[in-house]
Amino acid sequence: MSPTGTRPEADGQVRDAVRGNWVDRRAPAFARPYLRLSRADRPIGTWLLLLPCWWGLLLAMAADGRAGWFDLWIFAGCGVGAFLMRGAGCTWNDITDRHIDASVARTASRPIPSGQVTTRRALGWAVIQCLVAFGILVTFPVTAIGLGVLSLLPVAIYPFAKRFTWWPQVFLGIAFNWGALLAWTAHSGTLGLPAVLLYLSGMAWTLFYDTIYAHQDKEDDALIGVKSTARLFGDAATPRWLTGFLVIAVALMAGAVALAVPQGAFARLGLLIAGPWAFGWHMLWQMRKLDLNDNDRLLMLFRANRDAGLLPVLFFAIALLV
Image (cartoon, rainbow, N blue to C red):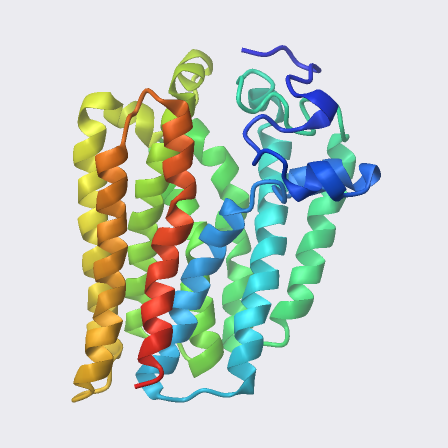
């Protein structure tokens, strides 16, 4: 436990940030609190928001066999947009959780509870990030723009979910995997069933990795009454639940591939189906390394999900060449 207003880390560094990250080493001093609010010192969240976007885009391209310069813009725009919207969402999360964060050892060093930035300035920073992201969104087709605007609803609700449900990870999954729907639609112009299955696969994946992440805070969360799947399942049942999320994530992604691949394109199907296969093996590796009472191991496994999510990107991209 850490009292409000203290800085557990030297020079304003956030406790669970990547050591030696570029924000702490190279960013101008005036910008560091705002970049820390955006989690620029912890890039894993941007990856976890971005990867479902790339899944949706690449699978849509594999489904209709079309690839153009605009797809390159969707690919890049999703990258910048993921950075901005992850930053805006994290800033909003820190505003709503500022009193909770001050009472949890891992989060007391964040910019608001540690006094690096005021709540009003943090809110202004969140608005700026949303506006810049909206500037990118309006370059996409109208249906994709509508989906992007609608995504603000789960982003706004998520920080409060841990107060009223044992399943806040579901709300995180709703928000973090929205890009699978948006990017598919940005390419194809309409929303398809494969994109929905891909989205649901991502939600199961989020339940997998964020339950691992939440086990870091289970003792502090119990003291202050914050709910999570880690507390709900407990140490004994968590491995069984994680296995279930793994199976669901892989099965739904495989289903998305099966529905998306053109009839008779067996070589493309083989490469596409290797995506969920490799994805599942990586999560299985995480299960074998799991130690629910080793916070360093939990954080390492959580961050390893960047590589898990990149595996479908790799195989989906290769499939486009067939």
